[in-house]
Length: 398
Image (cartoon, one colour):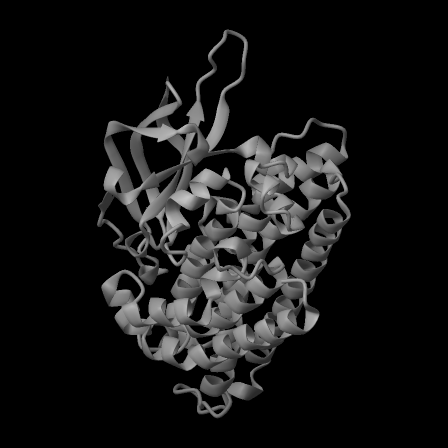
């Protein structure tokens, strides 16, 4: 999509559609939680608006837009329902990663229907064995968000070395739903609607070579799909984009909390002392800090995405120290939002513990998102601090 006017119109419509969907998402929050997955109406609305196609290859009906647009849409939807934004974040990013696969794999899933969706579990726990033309794969993976809406799955596994002295090779294996089972075990207290169920392959199934994606290719920006999908977006480092896809819904959810917090507390009177809550310094400070957190996270996100996109467009090799620093930035998003929503929650007093309180669900959702391994800043912070003091880099999911 190189025509700037066309791109601008597409982006404008995507943003407008996202805002228009927020009221419906709020109305469906309870239904979404009860279902343990997104309602069909929500998936249909996102498909109709093209949200899953934002970074999908253009040759398969995608828009091939820059990640800035995707993350803006995700944050807007999170104002209405963080579970919805989380599923969009994970599943839509898979359509971008699919563009890095060998063209044959892309045709395997999209040649007849380009709206087909992919779930994932990148846990490197798959049992992998070499086979002629590919690999045999089995295992039990957890946390496959949106799995019931998808017909394929990306599953992680380590390919054992063929020769002594060689290193294992982490890959993502593309598997059709006919080869795996979904375990309906998503019974949680936050992000209930993400349907992040387990996936099992009991007996080994064959995965051809072209349906695998090497982590090192996603790191270097030299994936097989780049031979046909020449948009620089497909050379963006997978680790930097995916990790933000599981972090940035927290920003939008916190924005929704801020709006509800103002409505709840603007005219509220304390039940014990009859004082106006809006005059409480703690109530005021909690709100001010939340607004600042949202602004800070959005500004840092934009600056980081600008760095990656500008360098991808220029064909530059990324500096490893910049990758380490910006990976830490991504891991801080969820922590900052969780810390902020916890302060807001406490400022609402005991009323906040009721399930129908406007802040309750988002409080649970943001804290649930904080538990994702990619949103734990301590590992990435230690790596940044260590490398700044001359230690070896210990993270390559950058």
